[in-house]
Length: 114
Length: 111
Figure 1 (cartoon, rainbow over the protein chains, first blue to last red):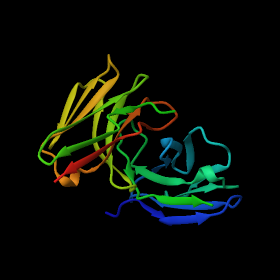
Figure 2: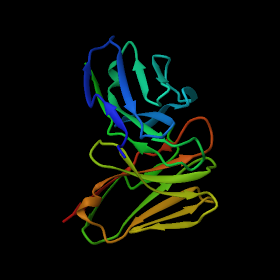
Figure 3: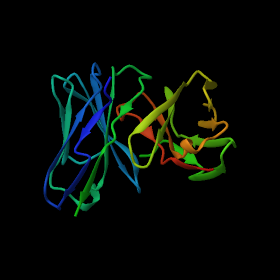
Figure 4: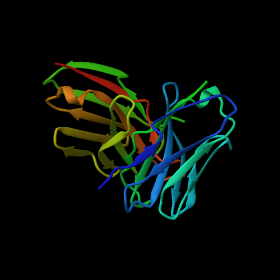
């Protein structure tokens, strides 16, 4: 069974641009969550989707948005990029939202904003 | 906000020795999980311990949980070079903010 796939692996953008990151979960997994990882703030929860609906959202500005498609694939979008958005963006999938479900992470998209 | 705080931030030991990492958290939890991350790659789930459990084992891993002290420890026995990685604890409070991760312990195993 293939793991969680994130594309692209690396991305370089300039301030003010927007970016879309893609995540394909493990086959059969219906929950996808996104995390931002930076050296200063560590891993921070962005949002979680299940069956195409956003279930939870972290404390990020409205420039950060996401969606999930009927095949469970998910995208996240960041508009009007700022230097501070440079980070490793990690996607994780799980079979359900049941408590205790372990997350399977992709390798991440390394975003650099210049 | 960071729920879990790992201690120490970095740990360097000789291959074959045991490595112990600690995690403290602030609010009540449903479960606590430990993950490993190699060189800025994705995280790999290691072990989960529920709030009503005190100790759990998986291979060379031993996790303890003390809910009265809001702390957990991860012990890796007979360490190997391949164990070199960052280790994160993550708490699940059952709320709307997903898993809350600590900043991690960077473990280096010297051959």
